[in-house]
Image (tube, rainbow, N blue to C red):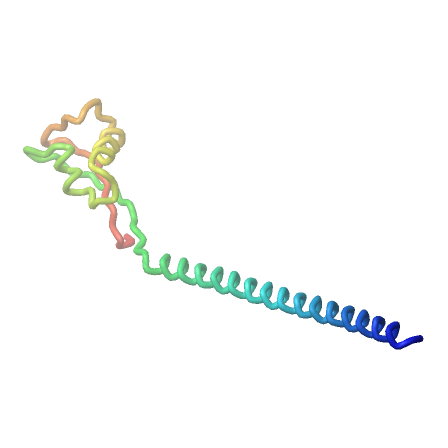
Length: 125
């Protein structure tokens, strides 16, 4: 084997070794990047679960209660809605629900009659 052939083979072997080394480095970098992304996704998921759980624990539970009242002078369904609806629903929906619950044909009510109303409270009874 002459010197130029030896030099050529040595150069080719060196190129192959460099290629293998670069490929190994790229695989290592890809693996590291994948591991970091996986850890990040896991951390964000756990963090959002913890935040969701803490949000639910701070929320006060409300209970819906029904009571019967006697209608007084100057009472209207709208005034009763203002008195018993604590903002859980809009006034129109509340009045319509009172009409349905009490089987009324209109929103006219008369003093001395009984009416079922509902309200919301955070206290369990």
